[in-house]
Figure 1 (cartoon, rainbow, N blue to C red):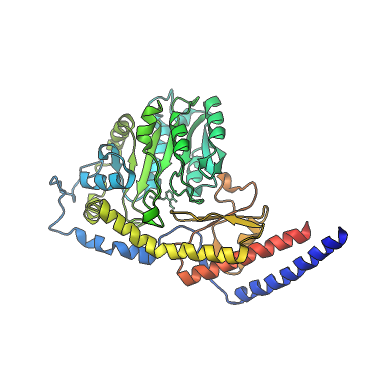
Figure 2 (cartoon, rainbow, N blue to C red):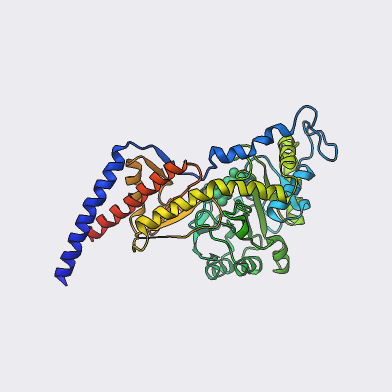
Length: 427
Ligand SMILES: Cc1ncc(COP(=O)(O)O)c(C=O)c1O
């Protein structure tokens, strides 16, 4: 037994030497590569370059003759609501358009609940002494940060391959009326690329909650962001499904064109059933005399129909698919078949979620940083930035060039192996 252990140890020691040499070679190159955030690259932004020319000083009126330069149309112009109907499958009458960021609509919606409560609330959420929020994890760090900043206790929910663990969710929400809501990224989740199954969606729509004003924040950020349009995945329309589930007021749906047109100059939307949306319209009428309708007009002209949307998304996929493929092939080459890493091949979205040997993710991120490769901090994909297994790393392949991405992934994989070997030698 001991002899075998010694043999293993010497194999590990020689592996460590080999990996250290490779790591130091990369370090000597003084790299400066950034894989921290899921931003579109400039080639993707260039796809939308014709957008700029679609409105000028002779073409600023919407189809119903609204002068888009002026105040007015506080919920947005009809032809741009139609664009969001292509994206989300939701009826345009249930859509309110904002400016460029869906995240800011989520923040504002939560703030309105803090100040005014929801339709069924006894008091504003801000007046609740204890308030809690369900956070499927791994998940989107900015979601978690919003609910944390607003004083919610964040409850992590296990993510399964078909969405959040619904047994856990149902058990929690049925017994605790301080749980007011839940984050969901139902299609190509950030970071795992998981697609919620019909059964998970149906259970979210029909589950009994102790809080009568429970809300699901359905962030459909990657609604049309398929890596192959031929094999596109879809999710049910939860606004319809929640009616048959007996909870018609349960969902707020969010989407944006950030990763369809321009991440800094797109359009975002919130959608909900008639009661919620009418209430939001009333509240929002105090907040603005109208959003940026010239940009809405540009977007409506740029995406006049479903076919135009598909063509744009095909072009995005053509740019980013090779990047996703490159990450997979390097991970496979370096880490495939080893017990120290697993990851899935997402069919859409913006991320690849890598699970490393428990207790190593932080050290791997540090080692990669000292070789000039910046990754999203380990733990960021969990509530409070704390991954109980210290295992998950989010890879964002879209922004770097293909060559940089290949180098960065190679460095990441070498660091993952080196830190794992060091841990094994210590154990
Ligand atoms: C799940 C998710 N929601 C929202 C956003 C941001 O959306 P927006 O640009 O519309 O604010 C992102 C950006 O990465 C995201 O991953």
